[in-house]
Amino acid sequence: MFHNDGFHVLDRQECLRRMAKVQVGRVVYTRRALPAVLPVNFSLDTDSSVLLRTSARSDLVRAIDGVVVAFEADDFDPASRSGWSVVVTGRANLVTDPAEHERLSRTGPRSWVLPGDGVFLRIEAELVTGRELAEALGTV
Amino acid sequence: MFHNDGFHVLDRQECLRRMAKVQVGRVVYTRRALPAVLPVNFSLDTDSSVLLRTSARSDLVRAIDGVVVAFEADDFDPASRSGWSVVVTGRANLVTDPAEHERLSRTGPRSWVLPGDGVFLRIEAELVTGRELAEALGTV
Image (cartoon, rainbow over all chains, first blue to last red; front, side, top):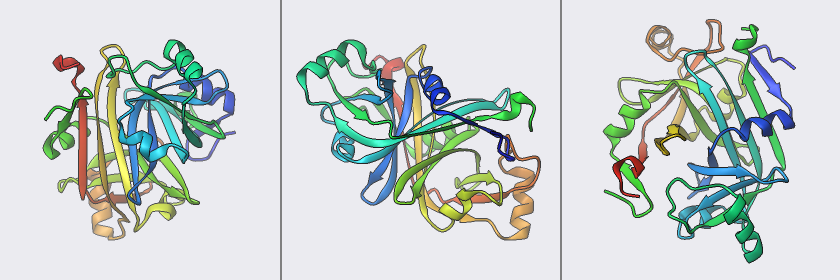
């Protein structure tokens, strides 16, 4: 489905496939009644939920555990004026089960800044939307 | 000032200089009581405010005109695990003055998808925060 404003809407599978190609996304939430956004390392779990890895001490855990957030990932290329963006919206929950934590330590997202330790937050993929710039497809 | 979690805090000038290097950022706002985020072309005006260019018909104008939003820009490199991110928080306002619109049509942000027309939204740079991954500086 092509929008008349130059974007091609992506279906859920196309969205998830694109997200799997990048390592950094942005958590969008509310902090002190203001919109807040924080880039963070992530990966997709086998059920399509978004896994974040962060410091146990971080404000992020306190701010979003149990809360509905948006998580955005994209890849834009200025040279070709093309790209895509995906937004996953769902509730975030701290992973507290030790067996699950151990599994994610082996298979989950790597952090670029944590030396080793950390906690995992899972964002359920309740709503997944995405779009791709149709420039490359010649519709603009 | 170095955080113990691997990030170097950027001052306002450093934040704005980095933002000037990229063409796409993300508007963070609230829509139907849920966190929302939308990538959009932008540029910085001479007073450091963030200028967005979007279709006059877009949901974005309706959603954020007169509202405090966050605007995020970043650049991360997976190969070197380095990068930076900046967040500008402030009120967004539709530019309605014809002379101002004309000036911005010549000097403001280019849109990758609008054929020519469009409107401008200005986000006042009331709060500017940013950080850079200190990996490249050897602190992690």
